[in-house]
Image 1 (cartoon, rainbow, N blue to C red):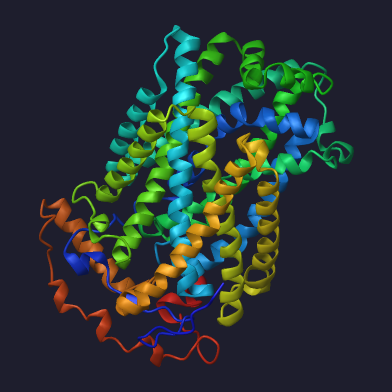
Image 2: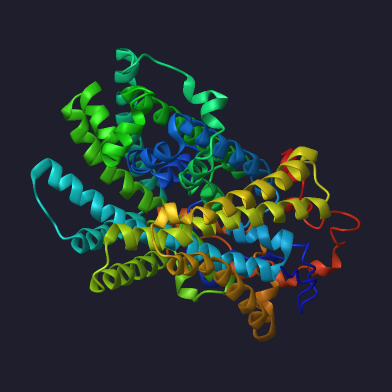
Length: 560
């Protein structure tokens, strides 16, 4: 992985040049500041994981390969991701850019790697979001059939889903957070009902803790369980891309990240343990072999009632929709950020004057989803085995790869930069996370047949899409450096916090007074231009002397 030493404008890779906000550049409003709290961001990232769908649809497969020790696999995956979160959240205090992974990777590994990460993020998040339209179609078909005996062709359901997600993504981020909050409570609530029924009844054979005994955990199938477990956490890392909309992001982002990882790991492990108790340790494998997709539904009918099973059918559909919306919002903010960089078309960087959402990016992502869904439908593809699994697989592997590379970038950044994060968060945790995340990625790739049930050739193509996307992004950076050096030099640049905050405040005042097109207060052009500031190259490099990101972007942020 090449690390570019300097740009044509002389900005060292360890330093982060400043850039003005989009509001300063084109007069359009920016994203609404300080609109999301810890709970709001946690709703987004937990909803992206779709807990009910993961439990009802995937957990039985994990039990089938790992036996009664399967719950520990989710705890191990959660512990690994918590280790990753230690360095990841420390980095959020030093990088105020809204580009998430690609901004972190740029800081630690250079701009070519950052471009590669941006391309891979677009592939991964779009793969996760668009592929799940296949799951939405099959899940809705099953629900309609189970409750009302109605059959609807899957393309119609998937296309309708695209328009529903577009509408929700077009609205304000606060509206989306409220929707996700309601849907998340519903999907987790039905599993809590099942847990209550099993605990009150005592289970089929009495409540037992043998799932956590070493003899049931240290088995060959645990590696396969980890494959499903890591995929179940998909989306937790998207906390960082909501930085510009978070209240007190230096505190909000880390808290939301840790809450999401802790909740998912404990909730998953507990839910899997509950369903094992529902059938009994001696009978669970027989139940999984007989009806894996109906495992949770059968348990819910027995311990709670048929009415709860009907609700579970409905809440699985809303769980999938919540996941879709969370990923859609994440993709839109990546598109917005890259458009503001000048890497993607500028039109994608427009923000709705009323809803303050990246509405053009939302339209573009929905249009792409529509093209993919229609293409698979026209080819006569199966919505689950092909649209879901084939499109989702490079997405999940891509996110694991981004996490592994980000851990390396965090380690390298803190090795070269003076900071106050301590040795644990600045060195030990990111280095250990890099090793463990690389191991997780290798594990998932080695067990990919369990996820796709596809041929070797198909699996090879799906896996190779990940390094191909990264390589194309890195190669594109060389073209940008040659043809548009100013865009290259300011890629993933730190925002001018003072100007950005002032512009946003003025946008809010203008929106409140119905003047979204004209800003109150001093004209933006009267504020100092970022290009008029001393060149970043004039500041001491991070490797010698004061931290290049000191001041508003340096370690002092951790002390505030």
